[in-house]
Amino acid sequence: MGLLARLAPHLPYVRRYARALTGDQKTGDNYVRVALEALAAGERSLDDKMSPRVALYHIFHTIWCTTGAQLEGDEMVTGAPDEAARRLLKIAPRSRQAFLLTALEGFTPSEAAQILGGDVGEVERLIAEAQAEIDAELATEVLIIEDEPVIASDIEALVRELGHTVLDVAATHNEAIDSVARKRPGLVLADIQLADGSSGIDAVKDILARFDVPVIFITAFPERLLTGERPEPTFLITKPFQPETVKAAIGQALFFHPVRAREAA
Amino acid sequence: MIDHNDSRPQSDRDDASLDEARLRQQAIGVKLRQMFDQVVNEPVPDDFLDILRRADERKGGA
Image 1 (cartoon, rainbow over the protein chains, first blue to last red):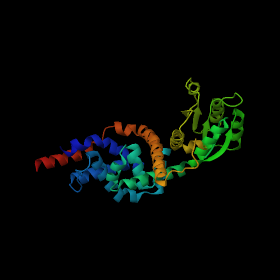
Image 2: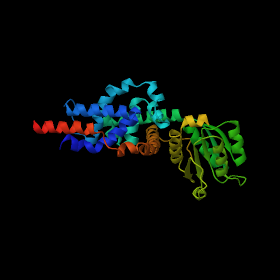
Image 3: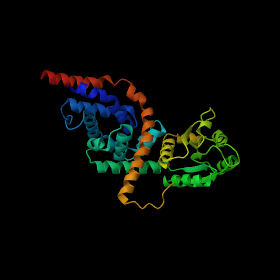
Image 4: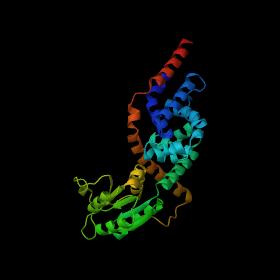
C-alpha cells in the first residue's frame, strides 16, 4: 500500500496535534509538510513495527523536536489566539507532547512512548509533570457556597489539594455577596439550596452580574438547574460527588476560562 | 470523603495520582477536541496529498 493510502486518513489528526503543540496552524502545518517531504524523499521511513498513525506522529516528532521545540520563545505564548492555547504553550515541550498525545489524540502511554522515542515510565513521568505545570498555572482563589459544614470541608480539602486557596465558605446568598465584595474569587463552587432557604443560583447570578468567573454547581437537586434557570457559564456536578469528578471539572472550567475577560470586567 | 491518613504503599499512591492526573487531563482533552473540531473537519492542504502522491508515483515508476 502506498504512502498516500496509508497516511491520508491520519493527516487531519496530525494537523490538529501540530496546531495544539505549536499554538498556530500555519506553523504546525509547516512541520507536517517537512515531515511528509522527508518521508517522500526517503530521508525518513515509516517504522513497520508501528501502526501507520503512530509512525507518522513519530516522524513528525523527530522533525519538530530537532527544530521547533528549540525555537520556542515567550512571544509564542503571548501571541497565542486564546487562553487554552496559551496555557498549552506554557507546558514544557516534552510534557506538553505526552499530555497532548494521550489526552487530545487518544494514544495509549505505550503508543506515546513509541512516538516520543522513550519508554512508558518516562511518558507516565511526563504526564505527571504536565499535570503539576497545569495545576500551578491554574492555581486561583476559590469561593465555596455551601451550607453543610461536612460537605464544605470535603470541598475545601480537595480544592486545597489542587493547590488553590479557599477565600471563603459562604453558607447563604448574603454571605456569598459579602465575600465577593471583599475579594473577587477566580472560581466559585456553589450548592443550590442554602441554609436560610436562599438560593445558590440567585447568589451566582448576582456574582456573574458583577464580574465574569467560572462557576461549578455541586448539588443534590440538579433538576433545579435544568429548568432554564441556569446561569452561564456553569458546570454541574451531582451530590454525592466523587472527589476526582470535582477535580476534573475544576481543571476543565479553569483551563478554558478567558483570564483577560475576567481581569477586564 | 478525602483520606488524609493514606497508609497505602508509595507505589500505589503514585499509581492513584497518575490515574487522577490522566482523568483530569482527559477532561481537558475532551474540550480541546471540541476546540479543534474545525481543524479535523476541514480539507487537508492539497500539497500534503501531492507530496505523498508524487512519492508513490516515483516508487511505482522505479
